[in-house]
Each structure stands twice: as C-alpha cells, then as structure tokens.
Image 1 (cartoon, rainbow, N blue to C red):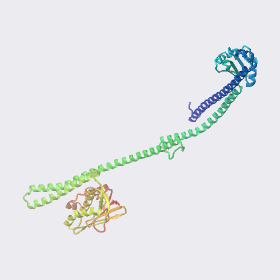
Image 2: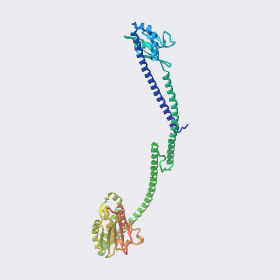
Image 3: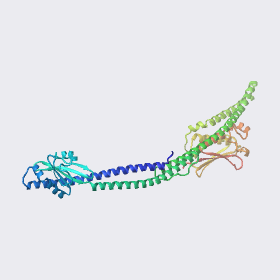
Image 4: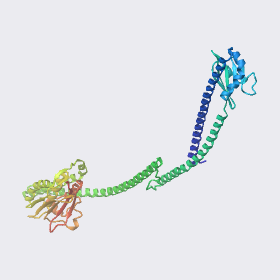
Length: 488
C-alpha cells in the first residue's frame, strides 16, 4: 500500500506533537504537584510551630505535671483548642503512641491503626506524612520542656489541590487535542506544497531522462528544495551542453574523416607528382650520362652535358629541399618561436640578401616600408619573402622590377610583393598554391622552378596567423598581398 509523502510527514508531525504535549503536560503537572506539596509542607510546618508554642504555654502556666500526665489530663482540651487556632483537624499522641486527644469526629479513642508506621517514625523526633484519599496526615514531634513528649497529627485537605490539578489535566487534554488537530491540518497543507514541489522536480527529472531539457528551475524556493531545483536546472544545462558538444565532436570527427579521405587522395596525387617531377631531371641526367658513355671524346657534348647535369642536379636539390620543408611543417609548429619583429628592418635585411641575384638578372629590387611590429618566427618570415622575391626574379622580364611595399591598415600590417614579369593566367589563379603546380613548365625547368615555393609560402604564412592572396595586377606582372596582425 502506497502512502504519499505529505501524509507521512503529517503523521510524523502529529506524533511529534503528541510526544511534545505529553512531555510538557507531565512536566507541568509534576511541577504544580511539587509546588502544592512544598506549600502544604511549609504551611503545616508553621502550624506545628504554633501547636508546640501553645502546648508549651499551657504546660508552663498550669500546675506542673509530668509531660505524660499533662497530655493525659489536657489532651482533648488542647486538641480542640489547637484545631480552632490552625483551622485543621488535630490529634495528639503521647510518647507511647497512644491517642490523648483529637478534634476529628468519629475516630475511636484507640486511634487510627492505619498510621502506625508513620506514628512510629514521628516518635523518633522526625516528621512523617501520609496521604489517604483527599486528606494528608502530617505527623510531627510534639516538644516538651526538655525533650519530645509526643506527636501532633494535622489533617490537611487535598481537595482544592486535586481539583486544580484535574482542571489542569483537562485543560492540557482539550488544548493539546485542539493544537494537535490544528497543527496536523496546517502541516498537511504545508507538506502538500512541499509535495507539489517534489512532484514538479520529479517531472523535471523525467523530462531530462527523455532528453527534454528544462529552460528554468522547476521550483523557486529559498530552501533545500529550491537548491535542488537549481541543481537539476544546472544539471540539465550541463547535460544539454555535453550532448551538444558530443554531437559537435561527432560532426567534427565525421568532417575529419572526410578530410582524411581527401588528404589521402591528395597524398597519393602528391606522391605521384613527386615521382613525376623527380623523374624528369633524373631522366635528363641519365640521358647525358648515356651520351657521354657513347661519345666521351666530344668536347662540345662534354660541356653541354656538364652544364645541363649541373642545372638538373641543382633543380633536383632544390626540389628535395622544398619537399622536406613542406613535410616538416607540422614538426616545425612545435619548434618555431614567435617574437616581436620590426617589419621594415626584416624586409630590408631580406632585400639586401636578394639584391645580388636581382642585379645578376638585370632587375631592380626596391622597398617602401612603414615602421610596424608583428609577432612571427624570424626564420618563417625569411623563408616566406625569400621565396616570393625569388619567384619574382625567376619569372620576370629583362630590365624588369621587383617591388616590396609595407603599410599599416587598421589592425593589420599589409605587405605586397609585385613584379613586372610574365604574370599568371586567370585559369591558373586558383591552383598556384598547390604543390608541384607551375604555370609554364618549360620556363620553370629553365629557371629551376619546382612548383613547391608558393605552397610552402602559404603554409608558413597561415602557421604564423597571417593570410596571402593573389591580387589583380595593373598591367603585366604578379602582385601578392600578405597580411599579419599588428602589434601596437
């Protein structure tokens, strides 16, 4: 059988209230009883002092007798007189425990046998009392001129005290029942609100279990249920974020697989291109070696073979060097060290190194650069612009020019490398950054080009956080624009 949590909490609250009211009632009633007892004992003790004082007065004012004779002769008289003083029923006993006088009607002269133990205790100069129904019998020593000469018994009515205690009991019962009922109803209503909040929390948890994430805390309270609601809300957000992140990772993984497949295809094409490009100079070298074996005494053939073998060897060496640079870029990511570089100084140094080659080809190399700073690896910066200037020299025309221009535009440093060479056809503009791609293979072989320089340049530029684009040239020639983040 299923019990709701609000009913359980209400019953538990009811049991707690019953226990609290019971304990409180018991403690209050015991306290009232003790207080009544203390007051009664104090009053009776005072009456005993009055009794002893009057007995001594009567003993000393009359004819001197022995204490026992005195009590035997005047016991009834004193008992009646003392009853009038104290307002209580008084009974006197001599030192032997015999009754010598009483104001109580209907008590035999032999005394009350039911108080024998208390009387014997009081005869030892001690106070004793005994309850009988609605009466309290208080027995105290009766003092003589030198020692105890008997016992005085005072009969104290307990009717008013017992009536007061019964009134308190009835009050506690009625008040406790009313408080219990009111508290049970109030607690049931309060726990109903808490149970409704718990139900909303349960529904929120069920929604999360079915992947229906909540957009706000299901309960707004300033207690533990409110904190639990906040926790469920944040848990829902985290689960939603985790699921979204997992889906995004899955999407990225699928994209990576697609890219890997494309890369595998590119790699196969890349290896095929390498094989083809390596085969061309090697074929030329082998042909000249075969000719030399056949006509080794021909001076003209010997000079031509030596010259062409040297060119093809240099081209093969440069091709191997560029391939190694391209394949080492991933490793180079971990070894490069970016630092603050002054652009105009770096370009001036590169132009100084390449000026000799430009003059050898009859070209002019000029630089116009504004002072600016960028974060870049110096070796990468050197490779980028040496390759670009080298291409501008190789594919230029006699008496041509190579120009470098650097300026700050917004948050970027823009560097352009332009030449007056043969230019790049429109159909080849999208392919020039691919490995082994050359616009004019005959011109490339004649100048020692490998088709790897621009691919290497683009990789280095992107690794350093920059970009490179081929611009539209005014007239003949080629213009490359490179952009790097400015460091202020």
